[in-house]
Image (cartoon, rainbow, N blue to C red; front, side, top):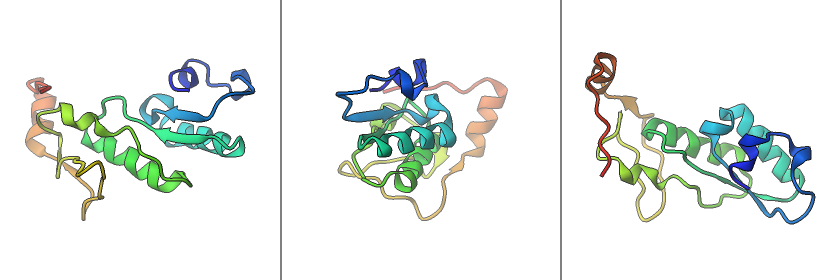
Length: 129
């Protein structure tokens, strides 16, 4: 289940049978708390959990990767490949995947000041490849 969770966030409203996995978009479902709620629910019901992006910047993708590493007992592929659609990122180092894997950078990415200034001035233009 994917969008069903955020359109009706009540676990009692879900079908009782046939659900094998929950696909959770933390940016839509309620950040850490909402994600943890559904991860805990899925684990009680022996369901797999996949965390997925909803086109966040590299900062958001790093956060989802961190949630996956900390909240999920079973590490499954996550839907974090949306960064490939952006020509540039707000952060340095940019979010990147190598051969389908993500390695956390040595230091937490920081926003590029020049990009923040452009956003504040209303001159930032998102460029999608």
